[in-house]
Image 1 (cartoon, rainbow, N blue to C red):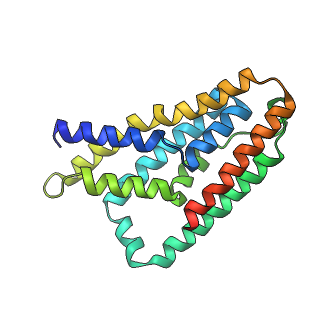
Image 2 (cartoon, rainbow, N blue to C red):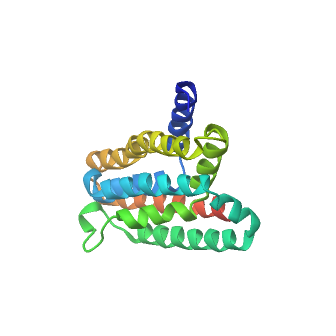
Amino acid sequence: MTLALILALATYAFVTSITPGPNNIMLAASGLRFGFWPTLPHMVGISVGFAVLMFVSGLGLGALFAAEPRLHAVLKIAGAAYLLYLAWKLWRAGAPGEATGAKPLGFFGAAAFQFVNPKAWIMALTAVASFIPEGEGFITSLLIGTAVFSLVNLPSVGVWAAFGAAIRRWLDNPTVLTWLNRSMAILTAACVVMILA
């Protein structure tokens, strides 16, 4: 894998990782509700889960979904249902101090979510098809590409958690925070359209 290809992949990873999507909306909501540090396992789960997704996509899982579209449909429905569940929890959430008993999405939940996130699938399949050279050394290139994407992805998604946490610090009105949570719930639910489209 050439340096030029690595830099192009890193640019693609940054652009696709920092733009809005289900992961980033959930991270902003988690940062708002729980703060930056409690959201860290969620961020790491996204990056690790995406790395696994990208690697297995390179090994042919994407081709399996192309051959058996019903399997992909089941994952889409599961992802949509999970997002609606998270949106409902956000809608019912009060101000950050009222989050008794609630906890942010953990590492494993965030990692598993990558497999039902359509944006993650598009990112992974495009990265493999566009930036990982075929032929001899494919597995080595796939490992390098996956590592590059993960190194760019983690700080990019972290921006969204930091944004949510920053809003939390500046807004001390419980009514405003409740409505901000509800706005994030609406955006999370709206991501279902992306999944089912």
